Amino acid sequence: MPQTTLRLSTTGPGLYEFTRDADHFVRGNADGEGLLICFVRHTSCSLVIQENADPDVRRDLDEFFRRLVPNGDASSMAWLRHTTEGPDDMPAHIKSALTATSLSIPVTDGRLALGTWQGLYLFEHRDHPHERQLVLHLSR
Image (cartoon, rainbow, N blue to C red; front, side, top):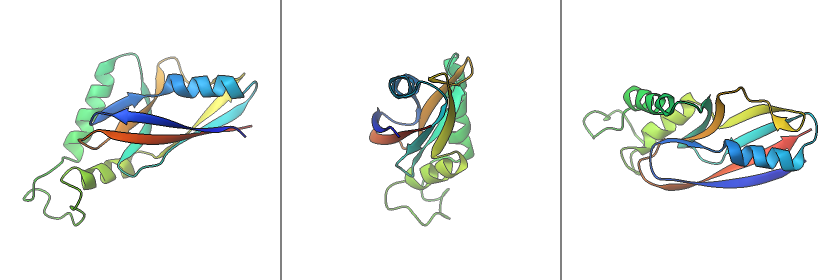
């Protein structure tokens, strides 16, 4: 069963599309039906399937999560215990827990069975650039 690791460089919070990379991997390794499993090897970012046509969708989603779980200063986030890695770290873990660290996408006729406007995204929750690893595994 084929497997590969993608490396994605992020520049800060937001959604980073990797649909083309995943599609390229599937097309090179599948000729029928199967299942693509995507797994991110980190605890402060996540994976989502989201619209890839209108960039406002990604911006609005990012803004929603910023408002839902804001990065805080000592006074507004005093209840947090895990603060050694900065004011964005524990909020990033919370955002990751609210989303997903793995996705499963059906493969039909050797292609990802995504909807017309669906894309695969790494959702970066940290403020600073990171090098992220995604494991793609194709099951038949």
